[in-house]
Image (cartoon, rainbow, N blue to C red; front, side):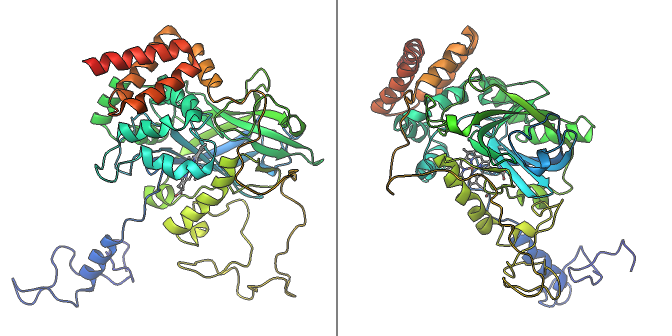
Length: 485
Ligand code: HEM
């Protein structure tokens, strides 16, 4: 049969793709019209659940190349030789809105990287911000509910957004970040990416280090003002997708330089603040950036649904030499993602091309389930141990052990000497130029002044005052001026 013949899903030729089969001219349609039934039924099943957060995103393939020796800190295979290249898939995203939302909005951006390494896929699922709003995963569903559409009004509500923050002083640093100039990147190419959490690296001698990842854009940082963003979002809601797709199609390949901050594990306990607190950055003067390599994106996916919508990144996909830290948020995320994937994509989502290992093969005793397409060999046994040369464990831990002590229970994070929720928000404010501060204050006031309850406004103002007296005073004055209008 010629390649130009249209077929049904079972491969039979289709006689007519313009007219449904009917009982006589003008009569009702026939149940025997297989092509019509198949077409309508498949159409009804085209959508799958969207991601509960980061629903809207764009993806691209490329590679990561090691430029500097980091073998003193990790024995991860893909980082073990300068010049070594590893294929990657990256998905960028906005967080709060649903699939139909606009790209040019004030919102953090997701920055998720899948490294297809020879020792399995390593997923680094970060954001374009080095910190986050909360520090315990038990708050995450409440936080996200307050930022997404309200169940009654169907809109994002400033009342909910600021009510949550009124009860979360630890969010002040990230709120300052979000409301500042970097809160609306001009495109995915023009923003940095951060692993945000502290992770653990282990070297070949078994020594442990804590690390934070920084991807610095080589395109330069570019941001939009609130007014510019409103215009861009109106003209092209998919502005970030357009930019990334077209740049790569034109042969303009975006790149980022990866750096890490490295803390010897023994220094963590006595550091002046909790180094596993996701609402704080590590000052570069304490832990300078060390260059690791270069991330380049040079190929668009052939099909957005198959490769971007069905991409599944999990912070729990580690490779030998890299592991989790005791950051509570990270620990919560180690569960959340693969669980979301089983719901959103099914238990066999790791068999989809974008998610399957590329530089190695998955070999285990997991079998069957919905849409299984990988039999793992005719005589391969589906139990272990076995007498048939099936795959066996290595006996080598993937990362170094963590020492723990104490009683089980719902504890607050361990106290360090300088753990308050505000000082880094104040430092960020003081780093800004006069113009940046003015835009920050205007952005906050524009949103906070829409809140209906005075007590919620007062609690939020108290956070800005605690960060920096000038910051608090200016936001307070700007909010009052807008509410008196
Ligand atoms: C997506 C949960 C915090 C970055 C998701 C998804 C869930 C989730 C369920 C959807 C996954 C999917 O359907 O594929 C959580 C929980 C968190 C948390 C429970 C806190 C306890 C964070 C933080 C970051 C982050 C701190 C960044 C540092 C991302 C990114 C995606 C995502 C980039 C999109 C991944 C993709 O492109 O497919 N999160 N998240 N999340 N999250 Fe989180």
